[in-house]
Length: 453
Ligand code: GMT
Image (tube, rainbow, N blue to C red; front, side):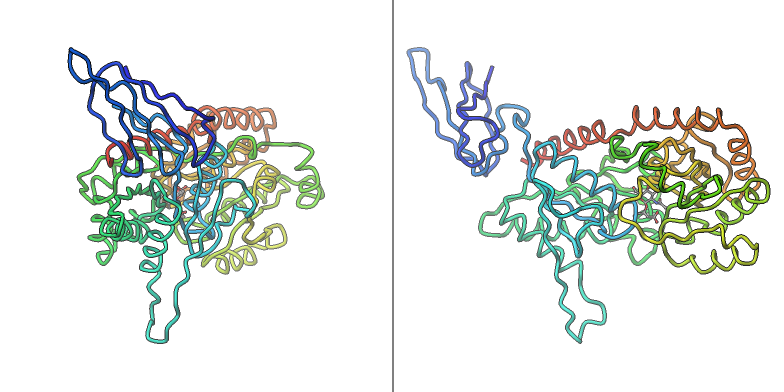
């Protein structure tokens, strides 16, 4: 058996040394970052390895016969940093990983919205895109690739994890190729996480499809956020590599229903004790914002209530117009884009998510963690998140009458509303809690590193 014995604390950075004692001779392979010195011991029975000292150029891991034995990795994360579920997922993952001791480097054109900028183990590297007059379309993907390679070199990253295939996985592929022919000739593996519209909408555009498929196939590891998205990617893109499903997650300590925290918000948004419905999205057509207004209108006719709309986007004005037409505009509150949404969501009774398609539906999961009952469409991966009648309610796309009926039944039955809310939180904790999901990513990274060594 082989054993790795740290001579100093595992948390030491560059000075940590590991003594490897082996009782047999075996196949040894080491990441090229490590310097290995052998002490051979020979006897009449032949030459045996008595001990070996591994000096990592950084502190993270020594590979000894099998498995990565020490797990503090340096990970570069790229995502869309502004508004959208994929950026939120990437940022929350980075924060969780950092808390577990990994060194996280965000590489993007802006600081991800849910970062405050002072978190330990988190670094942010901005990608500058030059605006030379010749460039009608500034080449962000090239600037990103260059920055990825620079950061990987400078901070000795173990891997890159890109969220959303287009263009991030193409940039990561370029960065990997640049480093491979660089002075150290190192291989930098990259993991691509598919989120949904990178496959269902953008990737199906003929002009993007071949390069999206290529960059997925070239990835050292690919994950999808639901079985639905994995199956659809395999079917439509016909990619040959394995896609692992790792569900989105929610931090159940941050997302929860705290009566003290929500009291002032309820007083503000529901001064006459109205019921509160909430919707959270980027107001793109796929979210069917006008269905949100239609459902709310039906509820509002029967029960004093108000609708909180968090986010912004192209369909805002049509929704405003519809609310005015229906005479409910005063009770529809457009709150705009918000960085921290947990308290506002938790202040509501019901979340409406009548999307045309959701590969997962992170907003519904965040509501569930806050004991807010989601009423959503049976679209894409949503049934993997919401169990109809247990942790929320599902209806067909466009069936605003049924969704309004579910909302009215719940709002007229307080015990039922609270019971489903509690079940929704229990489901979020049991299946999607970030502490569980982050471990799945760690294991996945290790397997990718092992394969790429
Ligand atoms: O839904 C969007 O328009 C945004 C998009 C994104 O890139 O953030 O959302 C996708 O990723 C989220 C996080 O993984 C998922 O929760 C959403 O379901 C998914 N959206 C779609 O599939 C339409």
